[in-house]
Image (cartoon, helix red, strand yellow):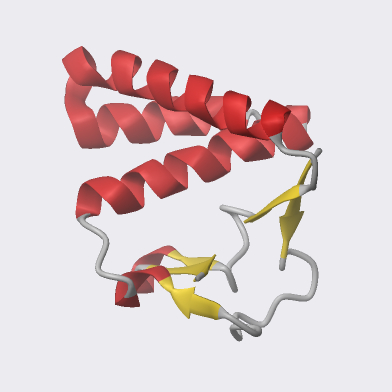
Length: 112
């Protein structure tokens, strides 16, 4: 089971053990992987969102035409494996929520 959190009515305020991803010391590549994962998870939660297409565009923009397909494919496989193996719901921040993901400020929230 997969579901997103903080989308409806989100004001961007962290809750409990959440922290800004920008404050977690991730590299640009790691932050991009996280964003790709969120788009793939969105696809499973809301197939009409076509999150997989957004993930493909993001991968191409960050990794180029030679690496993007392989990275995208491998990451999708990892996301799907985790999703299928979990016995509890897998929650994630909706990649299109302005409160959760303010692209202009590079803000992403993650639970630590």
